[in-house]
Amino acid sequence: MKFFDINSIIFEVLGYKMSYIEFYGFVSGAIAVWLSAKAHIWSWPIGIVNVVLSFFLYYQIQLYPDMFLQIFFFVTNILGWWQWTHPKPGEEDRRNELKVSFMGLYAFLGICIGGLVGTAVLGALASQLHHWFPSFFPIPSAFPYADSFITVMSIITTFFMIRKRIECWVIWIIVDTVATYLYYVKGVMLYSLLYAVFTVIAGFGLWHWIKEYKGYQTQPA
Image 1 (cartoon, rainbow, N blue to C red):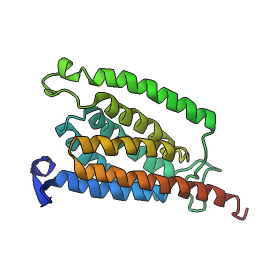
Image 2 (image 1 turned 30 degrees about the horizontal axis):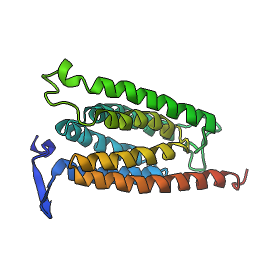
Image 3 (image 1 turned 180 degrees about the vertical axis):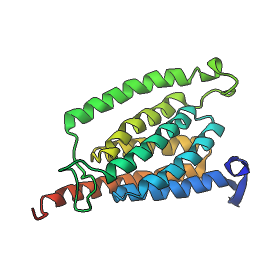
Image 4 (image 1 turned 60 degrees about the vertical axis):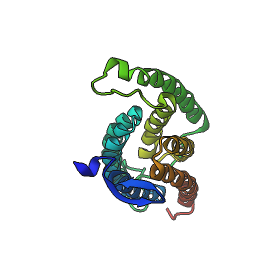
């Protein structure tokens, strides 16, 4: 289990000690998100590797909502893998996979408002975990509201990614920007860099999915 210990160091760069779990979490996460931006099916199984590593990492740096989020991601990676490879009749693209599509402006705005309400509720709960379950959470949750924002909005947008809704990338850009700052403050520098890269990839994903959507209109019947 030393591999999962954040104090188990693989190498050191400019005085920063890199753990095995952070390094391989970075690599698997970067590959998974890049493949998602390309609408590639292998994003899901590689994403499963990333969420397992991230679960143990977040526990050790007291980002508890993010830790619980990985359980959700584990399930949805399996669900997304199935959904993309088993589209309903009329929803398949030329590769016989699920097409990308828009959810609509009003639905998008409603989801964002609901996400902010969920953030407030989860943040309040996360701030009390060390009081309610001191054996499991001996140290108070770090940045419970910012962490909860990442958790709630990630849950929301993951469902839209499973359905290949283009607006999911707009939410990912916001979430990844917040996460970049949060992990930097917590001193997990490679994960901070990873989420900065995620932000750029999310921008590419938004562009690529819109391009693919427009391409459906030029396909022969």
